[in-house]
Image (cartoon, rainbow, N blue to C red):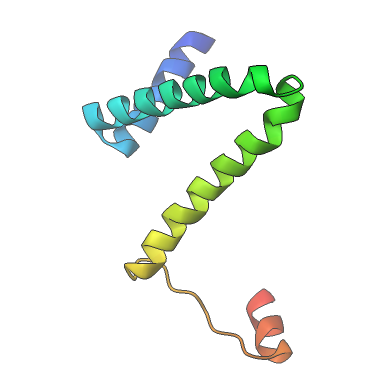
Length: 92
């Protein structure tokens, strides 16, 4: 199996997990939006390094918002720890 076959197989699995043609469309929109935003912001920055934190921050924040939505919907349970003993118990 060549690297191209493995790459194709990995992408097919990713699209299957995201959900068929809707997943492909979503990934295409994400890539187009990122390219558009980078195209707009890079001339205003001092090179890619100047804006990399902005792009990184936006990526992380989108993950945080997705997690918040799942927490509010009750799909993720957050353990409660009001004191140091409870926190240590969760860590171990």
